Image (tube, protein in one colour):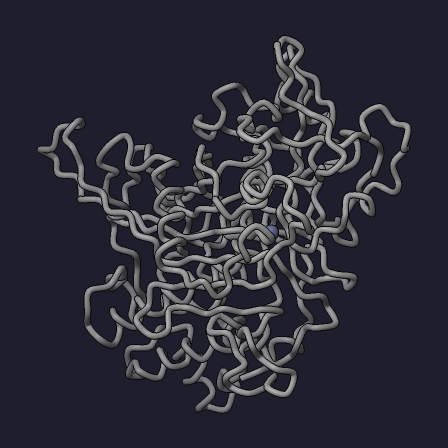
Length: 533
Ligand SMILES: [Zn+2]
């Protein structure tokens, strides 16, 4: 942890930030409830799953605001905390490599987590506009250097997701408890072993073709509706509520299988045996170790970088587990916004809805893999992200819809649309399908109307709008020095998306350190996909 890391809501305050006033500022159920309500009330019917036939995934960023601790306050004094959803995303799809465009106007990755994060960037850009050009109340206050802003000290952000992120965090051991009077695992030929609710996940049959069909644990299993997920993981009985403990380091990018990991790092309870694992549709990236694809728990290797599955076509998008692990080191604001910020914007906690879940696996996937990354620039650090699970089920999740529809005819399918919502006054909603606003025709592609507000090109446009509304003498050094030097003919003026991203030098330095030390085989889009203006 660096000195400017965010505090956890339960931990003592760091010197540079205000104190967390009470031992508990929220519960996982309160966060889930708030997000489900927001989904129900604020999101339109358009883009939501068709009842009884489709399901989707939900993710959101919740702002927590608390009063600043006064020295005279007693520790048990009640505190008034406000919780507000500031961005939300739904979606299950990811486009393949062949559909990618160099103009930045398509959403490559429409998994709910990624939509919620891009919508959050839209919210942050709006808040910067409020602070920098409109002189209005904002989440940002002036930083110590010219043109830079920082978060108010009494704010933090919690990320909510209705499910465990795809990729490494979804490779969850299934345990059979020997002392369990009624074993909650049931065998069912109609459900999938993959708990990952990804719309592009290949069928379990495809995934399992390399398995020995006569293997001892190749039968499919599923959660009996209403069974607490904890029975299926290597967590302890109360793990859904437990605090995030520290995860044994040294398993990053290892050749460990889940089975061995349970023995080596997590210490599987004596009464339980790992009988199988949930699978992820996300494949290992080239250059990393490969899954063993052996029967049962030895199918996957853990701790590896993975790419999202596409429909037939390979994707270039990293799994949500990988992306969230990256946000926990670089912040979730991205490179462009760092031009205006004194410190990255980190999440303080991640809350997961009711679904198969393992505390240890989440810790490994989101934090453990980067735990030993060193030599990050000032302000950056691997965060002590708090990870918790709620007991509340998202009513449009695959599991909930499956239970409700019982024996309805027809197949249950993932919803093809993605909904983005951001707490901004102008057009907060954005519904897309296949990476473009819903309803976009083939002929319409390339026009201004055919751009999602959270596409790269549109977020870049908002960034440029913000920059042009600030007088040049108030620009941050990272942008004005580049222009000054250009006047003397030494450097070109920043022009393209790529140039603006590269000019965020501390961010790039941090990203390079993270790649070198933990995520060497991260797939990066070729530079010609970032040359648009
Ligand atoms: Zn995902």
